Length: 157
Image (tube, rainbow, N blue to C red; front, side, top):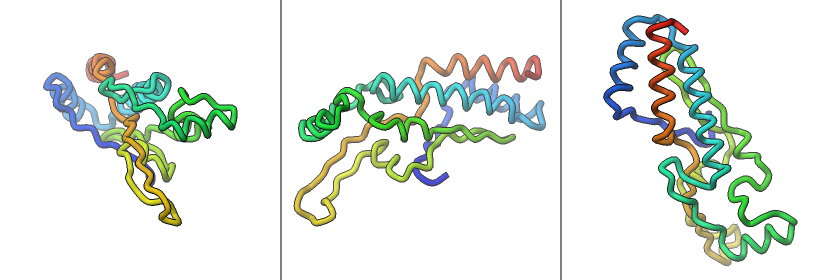
């Protein structure tokens, strides 16, 4: 997936144990990974809607000039990263037997996730775009992920 992908390391011991159990007991955990991908997708969509990073940190507001440009086009300056909904709508999970990847193929996705500092094409001015992380798992989503894995291990669904 070109554009932006975030790899998540699981440091939660309970989740790690459940993942080991899934691998040991089940040959193909694709259904569980698909469901977890949907949990992560919903979490990412909430990040966009609430203008927050996965860790709950509010995104930096738009620069005054950018806010004025949006207002001139009839858009709200409060709709950070969702002006056309292209980026938000491009986020998709991709699951297989070994895990799930949630990402986008939008070329400018990494700029918004990580931030950027560059000169414009003609080099007349410097542009700094602050990082506004949107990909990632919120702390509040881990219980649902644990429940999904537990259900899949214990009930096979």
